[in-house]
Length: 116
Image (cartoon, rainbow, N blue to C red):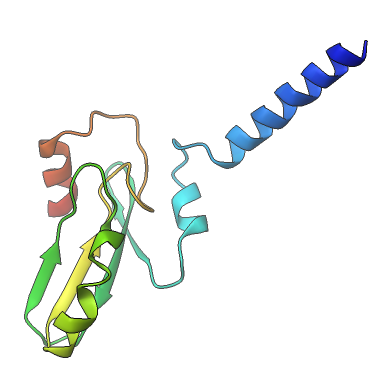
């Protein structure tokens, strides 16, 4: 009887954890994001992005790879901002704080996301 109750409790706790961190949730990313993130509404859910530097500075858009989020650029940003550049970093779908829609994460899907 105790084993059955323990197994049931384990299943319930696992289910609750999965509900809290469901990667398919469109709201999860924006709830957990640090305050310096902004969100753009895109076709498949919110895209997380950050802007740094002067509004009138030359714009540089940093595009991360398939396996990393945009925070990989954080060490580069202060130097470029000090040189007067405006920096845009964003997270592709399925990375960082952007939505995790059920779609194939292809180059063309990410191109469409960036164009939006």
